[in-house]
Length: 277
Image (cartoon, rainbow, N blue to C red):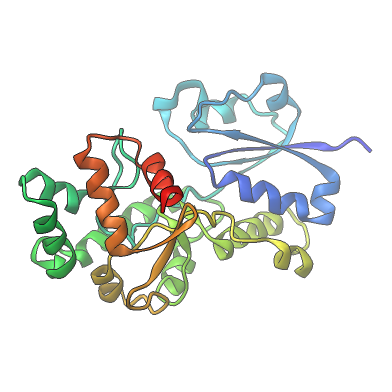
């Protein structure tokens, strides 16, 4: 039987989605899934857009040119079903995260302390042992981040923000700001299946689906965990960091050492530190 074509145009969140859809007996039997990574600027061939029967896309704006959602949809087979899926980014566990062009998992609180030319010991003391609310309004930071997600969600066919708000304090829903865990990945896949008229994922497929991003859980500042009431993070919690379990103090120390050494590839720095430990 010739399979129909399902295209996914998304960031790293597209990988677990493709895995779950392929695991559905009917969807996997009827559709060939091809995943194109939007931030890597992978081009979707025109013939595939013409052949497509299902497009699952994260909305990206006009600045992406021919890769923008509007441009892709304009070239899509008119008979195809297009669903806008979540592009989730959650800072509730990491209020000091910011997007920086040359440093993954940048922390604006630590960076501000570094700019004061303090010693590493002084920075760690202020960062770890003083109330961060002396410097930042954590509630306002959370509300601002939530407002961004609510605005993004107005375009999504699959909603996710209410589920995040309902459960984020009692279970880990994200491993990093844009790496959702099992529950959210399953939620997105099952909502897509429902909207397309398929049965739910079999329980065997649900049980077989592992944590999609187990290698790295971005450590959470203890004060932020306490302020947000994160019951799943205990005192002295240790987090998997590329093969090594680190507490938050170890992680913050790695961050400072990387920055003070003038290195920009923080991920490689963490991998090396884990390997040498």
